[in-house]
Length: 476
Image (cartoon, rainbow, N blue to C red):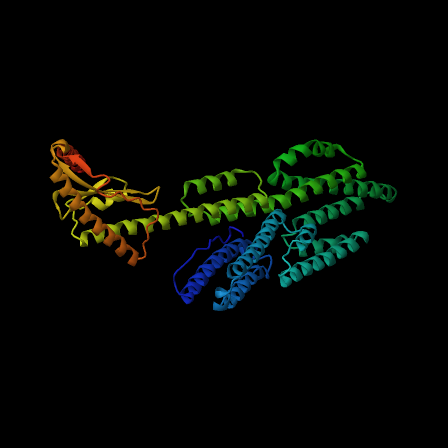
């Protein structure tokens, strides 16, 4: 699936009608975004090709057909995601072909319209654009007719007719206009020669003109090649230097063929590479995940990229986005469960003095909650986000555990059992709210009772107060 329209599937509890509505709204917006991009790309060609808007129309038609056929029946079918993935893949491939054509159009028409450039465009026109193809074919036919008239006038050496034809050639046809200008100049010079020299010179100049035309053709291809693939241009530099002094037509033709072949191959790779880069840059511009931004930045720095690299990048980014979505959902769920545990404890008579306890608990700190059994009895809680579990200890603060009598310890165990009953109630209340604990490790009061020294508690409170005071002073 292309990054032109990127998405990932997730599970939703919403009604099917709402899911379908949201899905269609998202895909329509994404498809419109891509269509608007194509509208921007065709603006520069509106004057040259009246049917260039057909590139937009076929995308809009595909969008409309997709939205109308995307029904509840499709949504509820087991092949729902496969159907949508295939539709989006087809749409993205169509968009890539259109953008490739527009990039090729930019390159070919950079130096003006010519018969060769129009012929090159025909094979690149998307098959769905029949009207645009006919328009280009008509331009080729008109240009061929014009060139035929020029050739007939040239053979008849009708300078006046050639000059009239020159005036009728559109300004966009720079190459053909220059050729005709050279021909008119040549014929005017030829008339000044004597009949005897004229026949000999005509043959010689015709040969020289053909060699010169080959050189001009090579120059055009080489300049285009240098813009899109400097490495290939450097490799062919010796041939270009050789061509400057070549007088043999066969050798000149061979050099031109080599330069043209290299350019044709390079432009195809360049166009696809640039389209893929633009799609990646456009699709992930708003994503702020550092790892994704680094991957996109590295991809865009490459001189050329392949479709395989492009697909691999999209696959990796989708995995990262899905992983982050799952982690956020899990974190939110765990936070809600922790808040519910705290809420139920409060409803059962357990309370706190510090209102910021929830933030500290979710941050992984050890917090204490007062119990209804007296100020020395507390619940000590710690939430481990990594292990996804909650540790709860029933603790009593004493001056010194060693001075406690057996009666005191038995009394503490009896109070702890009251907490155990509250704990069992808590577990049942959580189950009613859809929260189930697995692998519960429970230590009964008879097995171990937790005592802490009051002195340690006072020191902890003092440190906490000093920390709060330091924060307050810093804010002031």
